[in-house]
Length: 201
Image (cartoon, rainbow, N blue to C red):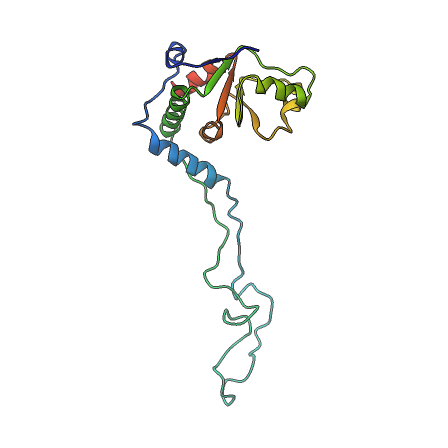
């Protein structure tokens, strides 16, 4: 399985739109921030004094005890009482425009191409579905954290790759900027380059 590095000329020949290091930095930041924010569940929740268990009985009489006046035991100053201004369920999701997404993808792909971190292979398939075969195939192309991008993968290839923590399979239509940033080497299989070119157009 031979692999070659994707050059700037090859990318331009495939109509892959790239931008230089002077443009798109903020777009990448905004998009990665949105990815991480959208993964938050926002389910943290505390109970107010109206929601904690307990009754409304006055804990002791108003006057004559020498203590400060209090109502029920669910007040925030008591152990087991309600929480003031605690977290409540909320939506952390952020929206990013299509223009920003496209610019961020162009910037990241441009950095990868200039850094010679993208390898191109004609095909990639593990017919026997064995992890050992997958590791041998990938190790012959790149080392470190690897992202393999293709238009589709067969079931046996997914089976072979599922226990390899340093490698990830993703389709060209679904790969995102964060995945590209985290990979040390990106392997493009077959027509995946054309699919990415369409996404950057």
